[in-house]
Length: 420
Ligand SMILES: [Zn+2]
Image 1 (spheres, rainbow, N blue to C red):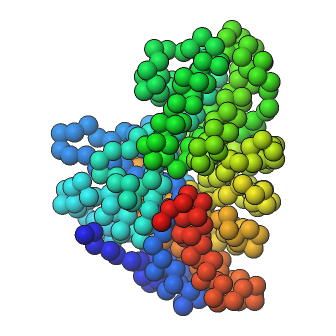
Image 2: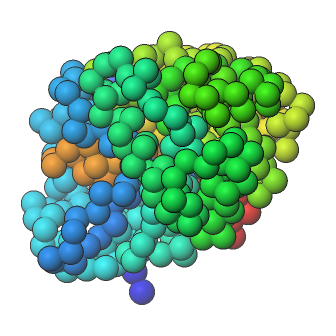
Image 3: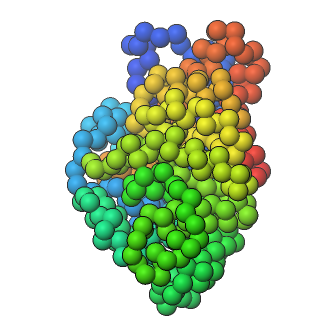
């Protein structure tokens, strides 16, 4: 039986820097104790699958890994020299990560979840496998590759895209193979029927709870509503408005995901890589899609909550089928900043707000474990600060504050994905 380690309030205060040095009203201690006890559902992360000695190291934790791009200026909290990274490493491994990993073997990833106080982690990965059991990890595969069935040379304008598109093409070839299709079918109808729909159904049957789009790394989040005829023509000829074809395929995937009971996760925020176009990731670009009556049976989750456009995210929560998580913010931003974002959302539509870490293997020093440690503690501290502020301002009762903490850390996600 895995050892259960719940985070203590004191621990997450220490791990997240030095709150005493900041001039702030502190977290209500009773609330902090309640928050520390809650075993969370992590709405978005990239756990690395533990592999045995001699086995190929796992490389399926992302369809578009950002750890091999041209150098960028890393946010200060993510640098290997960051005191929080060093502290996370010490707390988890006491200086010897390899020894701890070896001691836990195939149970290592589950052991890490226990250290992070996470009951269930949504694993955004190309594929699952041994070491990531469904009892603790639920799959979120990638759908972007399906949007780019043509020659993608015209979409490459910078070194990041030059690295990304061949990876999407490789994943699409894998989807072709898994569907038993030799290559690109001749017509759009055949493509949708023999590749796109069967891929989504296969994901669903393998346990997927959502499909993930990393679209903003490749193009704008502005999804139009082209006619079937125009999309068919572009598909068949390879000429004309390629974006219209992508938009058509995206809508087909969103609609099918709704039919299959899978949510649609969209990266909505600034992203990794020195060429990331932040304006392409503005959540307001998604509003026409969210307002389309034909897609109201599809649940959309704005992964990362739209940072830095977090105010723009807030009104979108009034759409009945739109949710949000604060992953990535918990990795890159400080608890005070994250708490202000969370408070805005909790004061608006709290049933749609979800905790998440974006635990990701950023570098040799900042693995998914250290990133997860920083993010789980930042998320809990930020939530505590937000709720303590609402309590002090008489917006909510103490009981409601505890209820909101449970909703954000666990219950909203459980309800959305039908988790036990
Ligand atoms: Zn991610």
